[in-house]
Length: 419
Image (tube, rainbow, N blue to C red; front, side):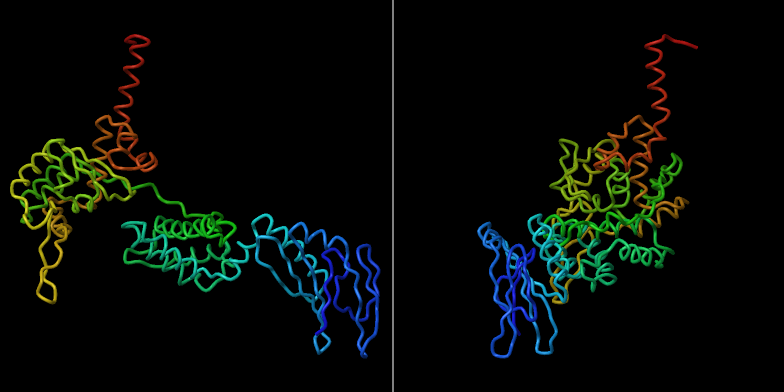
């Protein structure tokens, strides 16, 4: 193979050029014959030396194989960056690539695109699973399951092929899949898209594997309005009576605590005595869904029940609601975990004759009672531990009588009694 390298904008920088006589503004190729083979002596153009002094250079070498095929090898060298090379069949393509590559390197785009060409979606998800997912707390299990789906559907594709269209097709396939409850809910599809989107965001911001997040261009299904099912006064009385008569000694206290504080089921079940301060009338949640600490004010029957339970607390665990200890295969005692009250709660619901009600609806009931007793949306969000008001707007209509009363008092103060 005989080689020739030309300047980025024409001219030849040495080597051999077969069958050509060229005059250019920045170099002259003169044909000569030696040893039965044609070659060209080259005068190096002056601008090439200037490029090298400026810390950058792009050159093109013409190569002819033994079969007579011609190709052009491009080298782009910029100070502080690794050399980039590529080979083309046409000189115009080689020049175009050299110009674009040098510009992309200067603008910080080239190496991101290069990573996307050699990395797959599976590699991106695997790195996220290893480096980022362990920091997600309890959500790592749910998100890990969500990412398993994307790894299965899109894993083999290169990141350059991770397009909005391909993601949308995988989204639609997931949305049409069946569950034990029927069709996939829009909210579930949104959560799965959010998991993939965060992986792409990290790949853009921290790893430089992507130029942009393709999930931003994928439409999310519209979620239905949040469920608001709360206990009426009569239902609440019947449920509390059934819980009080339950054979499970923890059920009544746990339900009262849920209605009183609006805490989630596992926040209640995982409470320990060191988190409870009966003197300050508060319990501190360290591990919450949004990752922030939250204080549960304790008042009324909930406070009284905890004071009574503190007198008979278990000595072998700090849990307020401990489950039974199970022995391991070697005969030693295993870790004591929170009691499971789902079965006892369902039995109490049947005894009370209440339908279409879940444990999480105790949280909705607490929020509804707060709204009906004049609490603002900001106050409800603070009690429930929501960072924004979006999640508590579903309770806004329940505070309308209170809001109307506030407006009425304001009008009387300004305009008098009126009619």
